[in-house]
Image (tube, rainbow, N blue to C red):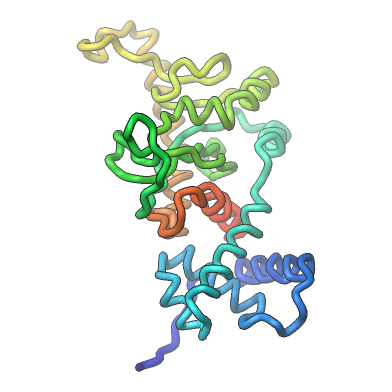
Length: 269
């Protein structure tokens, strides 16, 4: 076997932040000092390697000199402590209003998974998205006007439409924010979301865009142009934390993993 030196391309403050969270968690659960195979810093490196490199847990555990079972346990522990730090939706919206943001952007994306769930409805796997032809979970994202990710929802099965997932997790809070002067921009997948959720008007079926009146086409173009920056939120998280491109753990963990990536992303400077 050949060994080599590698560099983890993550800012040092991100590693230190996660290591502090892990150390605090160990104190909270009463872990005796020196009883773990890895210290908080090396455990943080293992967790961040998985998020950043999308490496197999077996390889990460081997590199750290621990068993595969211990590697999985350390990884799940890291995901849990990070997910607990995810921002609350109401706090995020309050901060947006205090900072004078003109709007927020709502978008949904499929976080793919390589594992099949046993949850079925009418013989169909709930975690299979017919739209994307892939297994995974539906996560809702809120982003700032410049596309910076602000908040991520709990995961819903991949077969759940965006509008349904939004009604479960985010729309009630957005209605309140809209009433206080903070509207939300969204795409046509959220048509019918309600007051304060501004979406383009859908053209008549079988007709071209020109069938719409100019007074409708212009607002449509403006909403699409401004909202397009919101596409950056999910893309930024998936490209920076490559584990989100295809989750190799249970689909039920997709929500915690996505929120953990958001917390890490907010610490990236």
